[in-house]
Length: 234
Ligand code: PGA
Image (cartoon, rainbow, N blue to C red; front, side, top):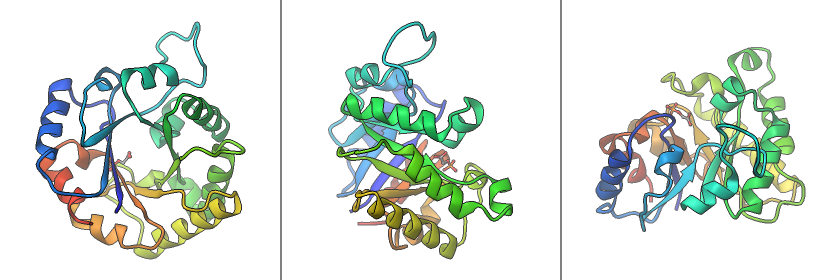
């Protein structure tokens, strides 16, 4: 059983989500399906798919115009939230410290954070991939975490680019993450792979040891691309 999470980014409408839920209702799968959608769609209900947000504020409440708190996201019906996505690190300046604070907010409000880590192309070319991944995991997870969390390894240079790391690169990264989590007392924490996942590569990626599922951007927007990913694994 794997976790298949979609990240709709700033795309779609409530009708698109309702249609997707309808189309997913007929598929036969034991995999956990999560759709992380814009805030405006968080109160759409489904008994088959869990709904998640794509980010939350690091603050509880107050004068933060435009921000949405973990409590609000949970109140709207979400069970999960992505935190530290590459685009939030790039466009909103999220750092590992911000991500950890947001993860604390998520956990305090009963949300499961999907914490993203991964290297940029510059970091990859400088030979820093493993350091960035390990520090991302160690610094982004709140101390003494007991509640479930999910980690997503997303090589930032590969997101939306149609590029994927090699099988060995994914295996090495996921082994490092699994070992780091064990060292932190978090053995068994699911680790997803994300960046340019599609129907044609999903099964192979999810056959790699320590890959517990995928986080899918572009290919999660249309059911004819998302369903083959969900049904590619048992
Ligand atoms: P992609 O995006 O699947 O379109 O590469 C992945 C993500 O941003 O989570």
